[in-house]
Length: 387
Image 1 (spheres, rainbow, N blue to C red):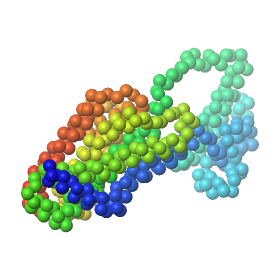
Image 2 (image 1 turned 135 degrees about the horizontal axis):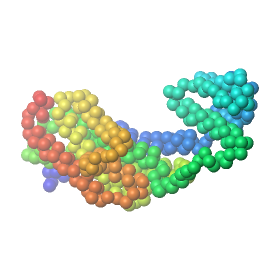
Image 3 (image 1 turned 180 degrees about the horizontal axis):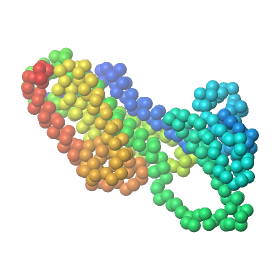
Image 4 (image 1 turned 45 degrees about the vertical axis):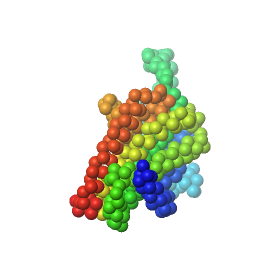
């Protein structure tokens, strides 16, 4: 036990000695809350507010009532654009073309073909185009209803079945964009925070010949691996805790009531999330140590281990596109934690069987990596980077 304690103290001193490396390790914990705050503000503003849209009308004089209706929806003529926004809307170049015979076709009860021209691939135009289409369709529907009423027909005949929607989701479920981002950032924090420590204590020590001297001491390789694992995992857990706490604090300044949503994490939810992510932190550090020791140099270890960061991003994103998820995904590392965190953020009752199952599988895989790595360190090929 004294040997392991000495090794652990040595690893902690090495980890916390480089202040710049620690700051880089905490980058995700510091940036994630800021990114969630900014994205949440932006998404709520786009969903709730209706900023002015400026369109170049061609033939506006042929449909004055349509122009007036669009103006009520804050869809204005390009001639009225402020000087500060003129360049922006000039580049967006949104046009509506109204044919010369629009009024004649309207009087005859025939459809009028109005052309909306815009770059539909431009993401910034998604919301304006949607608002323009909705406004024009609403105007067209209003005219249609009036024509039917003039002919003495009850407009309710057009809707024989009325669907009444009842949303049974909890208010916290309406803030799923925050939940998805937070879950993704927490998993990334678990993998990224301890990354530099894991690489330095493995490939870095080998290049500095520290590992060779350490293995010459009368201490088992298992204790050496466990000390390095605990050191890297500690930094990883600190990153996860900071991400969770800072995000919970920053979201308080986002007015989610505008979209009828709420988001809050009580002590119980935080405890369960940490219970899920602590095994992931150990799993990530063990995987990074394992891959680093297989590399022949420090640079090779950096490039190889950096690929592992893709796991906590690819798996949760892939789960979003799977409607009928296989049951085994609830038990696997990363996917199991991601799905359970999603339920926690929604306010769904926690399935403790899945919590212990995915944590158990994660710990088992971590233990297997540690045992295999301890066995590999007995080989000169690994220690001297000959393999």
